Image (tube, rainbow, N blue to C red; front, side):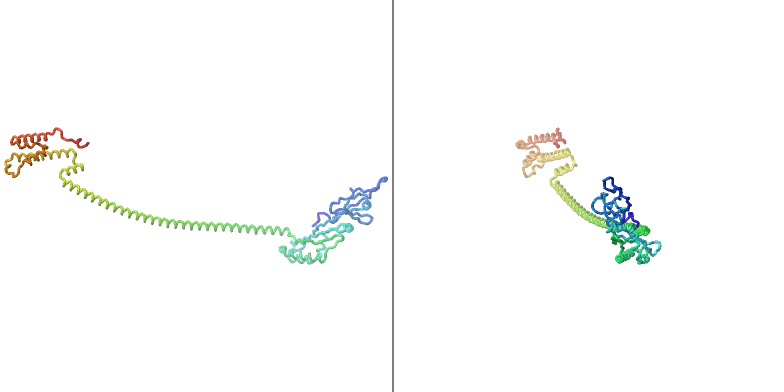
Length: 401
């Protein structure tokens, strides 16, 4: 690799003769005639065949003898500096060489010797020194560029051993081996980049396909799980529906059985009630029959078969007929031809009938003979007339109120 700046001599400049002093003034060289010396460098003056190194911690005044008598001055870098030696070694394929870079650390120990030797290319000298080992070319020629990893191990071991056995010697400079590298060629980097790109694309495509396949598999598994779940739910629903229908059927059967039992009980109660009502009606009818016509008429009125007015008229007619029969009996007893056949006195019976018809009367009237009988006939006729000609018969209003 070509160095970006010269090393170890950074700059070297010829100096003109110092101007003589005027009158009594001392001779002096202008410091502007000297090159700049940055930190880490030393000025080496050449005067009268000798080299004087100025690296003291002080400033030049331009009146120093080695400055006034100097013919040239050089700026030498004295700090440690990395030097790279690059080698191109052929591989098994002639168009693909191995690029080897060896890093050294160089430190100037005697600047005056370096300036006396003159300018030289340290990196090139180091590369030439390493190429003197024929084993390096043999190692590289036996491997392809794709075997870069193996070559790195072998080259590193070989250069380290070679330099330890035969180091580079340069007066005034201490040089130390730091690092051995076998660089990756740009063509190989590009090819590897393309191959990695292809591999990465393939891996990415495989990952995408795997992801899609996994997604499809997951979707299929989810769909199967959903279908199984739906089937289970449908089965559970069918079972629950069947159980519910069975339970409802059992409940309906139980309710129907209860309704039938209740209906039977109700019918039994109705029949029992009807029988009781029939028995009561029969007993009531029998009682009415036992009590006589008045009870039957009251029953007919209660059942709505006759009105109260009709009932009153019927009772009045019965009373009139009864009275007529009684009067006939009295007259028969009092005026009949067969009265002498009676073994008992008829007068108490006549008094009872008259009391029932007309209320209590004076018995003396009845015992007065024929005149009393005539008066009784007239009273009976009058009572009979009044009964037939009742001027204020009962009406419906007399039975409601």
